[in-house]
Length: 371
Ligand SMILES: Cc1cc2nc3c(=O)[nH]c(=O)nc-3n(C[C@H](O)[C@H](O)[C@H](O)COP(=O)(O)OP(=O)(O)OC[C@H]3O[C@@H](n4cnc5c(N)ncnc54)[C@H](O)[C@@H]3O)c2cc1C
Image (cartoon, rainbow, N blue to C red; front, side):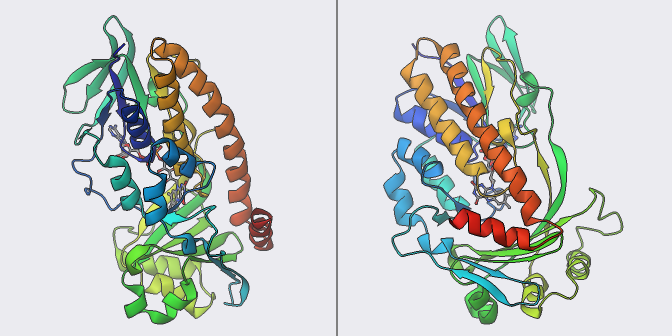
């Protein structure tokens, strides 16, 4: 039986869902707000874990391509204290494949391949329970009906209100991100500091992490505890004012660490919001959520992995039981909720320890994860 299935959002979760469904011969419509694939900078490198994101890519038939593109050496991690002393310098074994890194753009292109995405399709509202099926309203005033609408539209999902009244709340931790291009040529000393993977520096209630992406591009993430309006006196669109504000926040830290901020090109403000750890909803026929739309959690290396596995499992559940779409969705939701709760608990505790009054907590967490 041919169902009319739409997925809202062409991020890692939505694309994996579409790709696996497509692989099973089921047609699916991908509705993406961005007007083109390159309309926005893609964001930093992702590490994809063996039992999560890599498993999803296996289900999508893309594991070999991923292995060819990914950077196992990107798993390297160096930890410094705020004076610049190296506390840990961990390098992966050359065969280590537990968590290799891949650029988001490469991952997206891998998943996109032959998928037919409708770009520039911004969904404004989803209304279940109409006689014709689930109504999707677009921002341009048009509308369309489907048998199943999957919300893979991220943190501020427009599909979520159709199943749940819950919205994300602020964690009390803010991130400001910047980046450096062509680091090996322009800033060889900083390139050495970052190494093949990441360098992380933890102080009281704040941290700086710099991570190598491909092509000599480095993303620098600062995190700190602050009220949501911490920038009330700062114009975040003014690059130099933002840089000065950040340098003041990290005043007294070792010069090379501050240089990562000093040479950053532009700054992106990302206050960290999350959904409740146990976010579930009463099942609604014809609508479901996956990825950040369902279980937004602190960005500690799990979100894209979970979104992709959600997408792959929902697609497999539908393909395995095509005559009972509703039952396939229900079974998926139960599985997703219990996995998401486990990871939300881990990442929530992780954020508390990584941005903690006692920087020794971050080091202890690193060692626990290594073990
Ligand atoms: C700094 C940072 C680093 C991270 N690092 C990692 C990591 O190493 N590993 C990891 O697993 N996770 C990581 N994450 C988390 C990860 O980025 C997210 O969890 C993941 O992208 C969620 O995927 P998704 O498909 O659910 O949603 P998204 O990636 O948010 O994709 C949602 C898509 O929906 C589209 N959309 C939104 N609204 C609409 C609408 N109304 N209509 C149509 N389309 C819409 C958006 O344009 C977007 O393309 C990181 C996050 C951050 C912020």
